[in-house]
Image 1: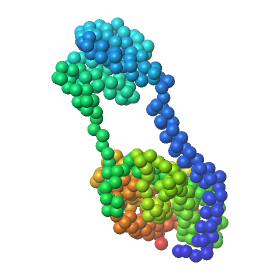
Image 2 (image 1 turned 60 degrees about the vertical axis):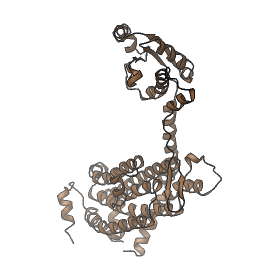
Image 3 (image 1 turned 30 degrees about the vertical axis):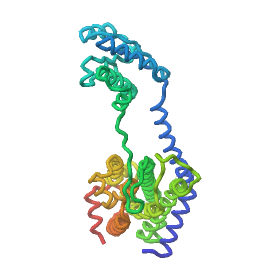
Image 4 (image 1 turned 135 degrees about the vertical axis):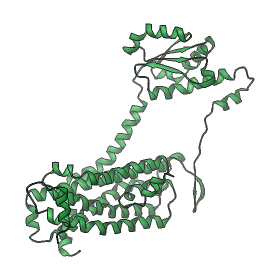
Length: 419
């Protein structure tokens, strides 16, 4: 399989891709894009340009007075929140809302929060608005309303201020990671962020490198360049060289992206707060790169085979969806694993061929994974590569020289039976 002609194709692929503007641009741009997206999300979540004009309506004068004292002395007033306070029962509320319906529809009033006396037992309040499911608004106000309800509920029960403060507190979970090496160690959110980062980078790289080899195969086929190349090398040698060159380029790009993580995790130059401290070992980084390389070989073989079937990009995109599902489904499984590290589906997918390329790196950052499991997934991917590569190679060998009518999937299956 490996000879001078394969090496020549490999060298050509690496040279074309590494020095290309696209490679340099995406290697630099993708991390900037990621941090840009995170920054935009943080800005949108914390943006304070929206003005909230709220009516706070309660069923008792005492509740109204308490709400007024707490809200008007809160930081919400500095964040473009304005409040008007009223006291009325449920029957009066309906008339009041009818009178102010046009203001609510015109958004001159953002909404009206009704706190009945029964809320002191069940903590159920009502919110009337043109957009009643405003998550940011409910997150901002629920704490203040809860505090007033607790204070009012315990007011005549002879509790001290310390007891009231304790009742207001929510449970604070501190996570301690149990591991064989370090015993019990408190862990912050750094590795959760790292898990998101690995998942996103692996997903993006598989898509990018796959699309690049897909377009390359289609261009060489449609421009007839492939016929010239095949006069010097066999289709098997051409495909092997292209896939190895693209996989090496993808692994190099991944190494560049992971370099800042390695620097931050292995040095004391960047003193991160304990809650965002990153714990990742050299073994895990090496594993990620090796496993990614073999996984990339498999996917590039599939992308190249799809590219060889079709004469143009439009047809190829329609035939690409089975391969895309093999990338997208593990991507979502990895995210679910971050939410629930004990997920049975996530744990099973971390061993499954193709899926483990994205899922296992996400899993190993949030739970302790034995070394044998990491080695096992690499062996699985190597075996998968040797199982899939001959099939993809047959499709590539027949399809790359075939032009004319778009083949059906039944015809593609027949290609596999040709010698």
